[in-house]
Length: 277
Image (cartoon, rainbow, N blue to C red):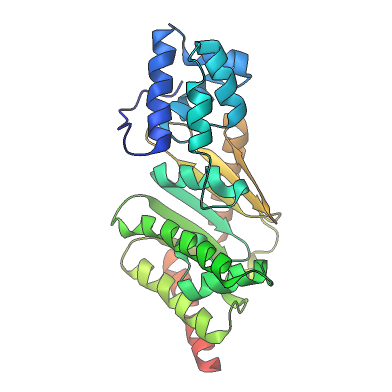
């Protein structure tokens, strides 16, 4: 069961709903498991809603109002807080990312969003939306750069990424954009703000060969796994499933070269792109 966490209800809509959910549940004399049962979710999931690490969806809000007899409170507030600057498939994961104390990410094709520069992010967003309006692209880039500000804090969250060698070789946006993007990563490494490893092509088959993987750990809630695909995303909290993905990440990290050697590889790739200009 997720341990109670002191929330400031004014800090975010999720915190407000989480604090009220805990209050109403305890007022009704129900445990997290007892409330989760009629919603067909685990007690841990209820704890994640209360802790603010999961976004409350409308189907849960309606059932919670019914079970706790809260006269539509959660339905109304769920509607009011539903909008997100992120795509629907990623909105809940972005919320969790903000609360995480540790983020581990395996990136098979692209530089992770938290490490992207503006020019790199713009090239990616434009590739995803080749006919999109400039205003649309600007909004997407702005949202991605806002996420990256998580690393402005000198220590939290701990961010550890494993980059497939393909990330260093694919020329996203052209040589100048890639040189800047890779130098941005090396600067973060040298400031000891992030841990980065490179998984070389020579590693061959590995445990995460089929796609990207993000793991988010929290002080007072179970670890979440996020799987990303083409226009889709899945946030998973089943402990056995997440444990399997944790093992996959550990195996990928074991197959990657050391952080020191990875830094040298990234710097070399940056220089190669710089010389292409």
